[in-house]
Length: 331
Length: 261
Image (cartoon, rainbow over all chains, first blue to last red; front, top):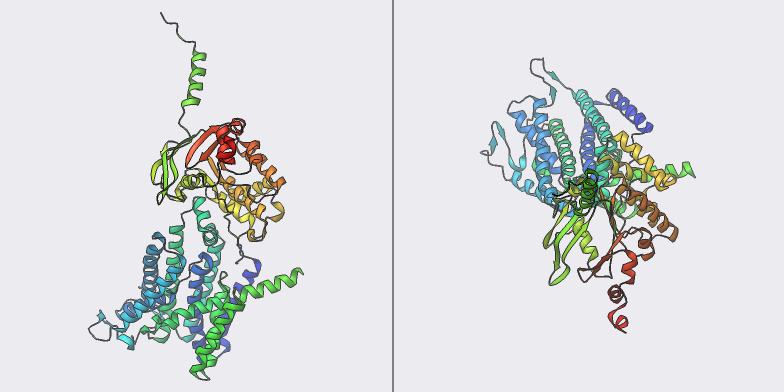
């Protein structure tokens, strides 16, 4: 599992990540920058799941739902002339509120971990149906027409539009920096949270909830807090995604999307946040590569990958590498 | 005319009386647990005073574990009440029971396998302390428990006895007014049992303790009063010597046929 303290190596990783994000747009084509941006958005989504699953042991198949809700919230607010930054905040809030509501029912109702996974998946698929049935133009919120399976288009792109200041539009590079900065910021804050007393108590709850409660820690609100936070971060990722393509449709609530987030974290290894980032980057790169060879292979290869990880490398890539390195260092 | 009682006498008399009558630290009133038609615990009135080290014994199925689980808030009684320091705690959630000052050690070591020994003690102490004070307390306890050499090891990698000690250490770190220990020496080697007995006697100077145990030698080392359970009721409550000499206790432990003959 994750080291309890933030180590020096991590400081170096953070520094390297900042430099990489700062320099990358200067080195590669704009097309690549746009591509890598969406990868980083998926990294934010993967990190959001790892906050709940890796730290607190709460496996959620609903990350795609919170992501989609964030995306729709951003789109609806943006199309109704809310500033884009305001829309971003609305998306974060929407993700946090919906995950908080679900979490409240699950944790205060003492629903088991397995049922939490089932519950979140069910809600996601319900959302897929519901949003898919909004094709009639009468389904609109203010100016925003929901559009059924066709989704919503012409979503405003994220800019720096604070009231009273001249709005600044972000080009592809600017948006890349923003997404990269947010990802790094979230990972750093997440790591600090994990090392803080709140995070350590959550780790204890993950390992044995009754023991934590017998020491006087109320597990319920702590799980609710991390689950809401996780949903809020997923909502943020959804808003960034909607802004990235100026488009969102109910596909974000599909089964393959829900499963994909879990696969990212599973492959990269949970509990460190870095594993989630690594997993999202690797799997997405692989998906894209395979996609260029024909769609049938993509699903097949992803399935094979998942099966292999579950059977052979259960802990995920990063913890396995970490163990190899520390073993060769000590032996 | 009645002579006024000398003040000092009056006080000491009163103090002695207070000792007798002071509200017990823990009390159960007609505590009952039914499983289907079976009375696992059948209306037990039980009292533990401040500072006591009480052992609960009894043959398998006597109801002591069920009784213990009700005290610990893990089982809801069918009837009856549990009072801690005069306050009713029946069916309170476990974290609230802990916050009132009751520390619990479960029968099967219940620890956080993925976390280090140090973290266990630190997190246990953290409930009542800030992070730095908790760290100090954890360091102290590592020395007291002799776990210093494994402080950074994952608890999942430790031996059964060590895991028991980690859990006992957590309960101590909690600084409770009352410790409930369910078979703390289960699976321990003889020298570990010895050390545990010594440790509990030290802890008992400041903390009241209730122990469920099977190991008679261990009980002889530590117990003040022993409560013997039988068929969901209290059979005898006395010193260990008297309990061992008690014919009815022998009867339930050895079987009625032999005792009668």
